Length: 235
Image (tube, rainbow, N blue to C red; front, side, top):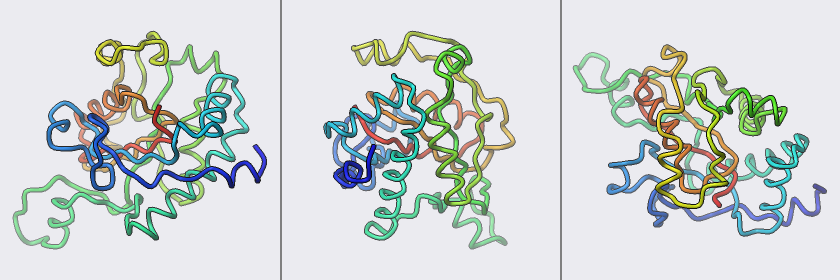
């Protein structure tokens, strides 16, 4: 993609709940959806209805053009800069109030999860090894590594693994079937990495949120205190 086309793409400046898609502050999961969704917050970089965004992501994911990681990463960084400057929200700082209160009052018994001073851990949504071998790269990992390198953040691509090579979510139309398709397919490999940590979960496209939700479910079961999902677009 040329610089001219890239400049034409606008970042998404609205926020929505991962479950019901209603507008919420900074994409926080609403009270009702929090009963079934484990993702605490959803950040969406661009609008999938933009033809350039749709074409770029489809070529990246289905035409196996790994070089598209570069323009997509530029778009992600533009969005993160906008979040910080215009919304006063730095995605690379911890935002767990209970953990922060415990740090501020170290001599008091405050009910809080343990926390890290290193900021959130970047975790890309994993592919099954067969699909990884077929595609040649994990698009979510490419994006996560680029973000981690730019902002000097800790990343781990071995925290969770995908156990089963199920039917691709894009081939399933019904929301309920998407949710069932992914049930129990992720497993935590390294709990020590995530206990007491906030996680920034990276993926390219979110549709129903089923994949992100299943990842967040096992991450929290493994000890993560908060999971924020960052995606390029929502289909």
